[in-house]
Image (cartoon, rainbow, N blue to C red; front, side, top):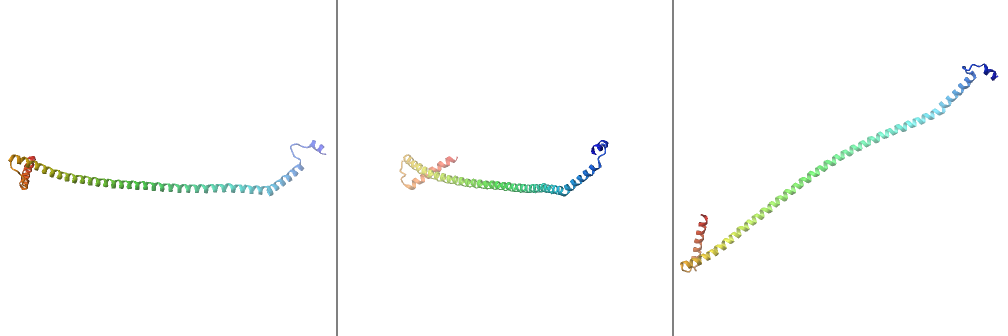
Length: 175
């Protein structure tokens, strides 16, 4: 029967029995897909979306935390730099103060040494002048005694003669 029917059948129009069986099979396939496969696919799709969105949220949170830590680091770095600058300035000020103290002590010591040297020079000059007066006086008395021909052994006479002689020398040197 199919052989005879096949020969007379129009190839453009499908056989209606095949259409019914195909429609039932398609409907059954759609039902199985909608009932069993699609919910599982939807669950997997939602899990994947949640994982991606969760990953994005975690990445955003991590980025925000990293930015916050970066800002804290920058603030701490600025604070440390400010503190270091303050410490440097304090050290410079302390060094300048120490330098000034050392210079002041050195000036005081220098002034003290110069004053002691001047005092020593004055004392030595006084001693030398006294020794020279005595020596010059003795020589003058001896020479005067030889010139005058009398002995100037008397101490009062000798002192008067020496003083007159030295005063004469000083007045001659002052001119």
